[in-house]
Amino acid sequence: MATSGGGEQLPRKEVAVLKGHEGAVLAARFNSDGNYCLSCGKDRTIRLWNPHRSLHIKTYKGHARDVRDVHVTVDNAKLCSCGGDRQVFYWDVATGRVIRKFRGHDSDVNAVKFNEYGAALISAGNDRSVRAWDCRSQSTEPVQIIDTFSDSVMSLWLTKTEIIAGSVDGTVRTFDIRIGREIVDELGQPVNCIAVSNDGNCVLASCLDSSLRLLDRSTGELLQEYKGHTCKSYKLDCCLTNTDAHVAGGSEDGKVFLWDLVEASVVSSFRAHASVVTSVSYHPKDACMITSSIDGTVRVWKA
Image (cartoon, rainbow, N blue to C red; front, side, top):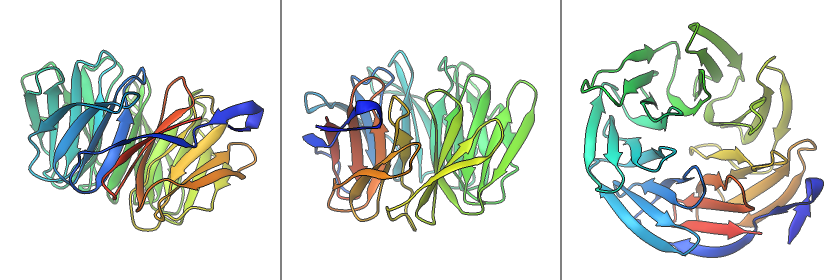
């Protein structure tokens, strides 16, 4: 049992290996209650799993190229996905049917997220834009385009009223949808993943100089930096544990790192995969984490 920072138990014991993808797994995500997870990858598929029972439930096929991101609604009824075919897919989870394909991005799409009610979805791409789509409308045109970035947009996070996006141009940008205001935080290094703390006060940004940076969302102040891992040429996820006591991230050498949020010390690092760890996703309630890798597997970790 690994404990630290307020006695939080950390998931370092491998309890399952989810196999089925042919080729690199580019993302793995828990659903909102943590009972299921989704993965996607180079083999152009999305897979739905029960990670706690090592059970593959369904495969979703339709994308013409690699699938880079996937997200599911709170009620688990719909999912969205995106990737190298420049399209955003909107799926019915139960039937596996594609309800709609949203076209408009001029290049690969890196990230996609539903808003809180699943009525809209937001996507981000290499065409330097963030686009919003209305899931309830029959239209396949975006309802909003944000194109203030000067390079590829890699990662997204949504709050009730904001879209937060990280870009290769070295910025994390926050758009307040209600008043149309944009706040820009300059990090000076390409940003390839962002995650917001559970209390909503901080944003964690993974940068391509092998450093994670923690920013105060209200002031933009750099609060802390986390190092030790390698992140120079791949998009690697980062996240906070469900208590916000620790930071988790993958590394290009196949390791997963866990840092103390406040001290920035490496509390734990361990070999999780045979190759680059592309994704880390933390369970919303329990000491449990899933990771994915270029090695073609998704792995489940518990305390």
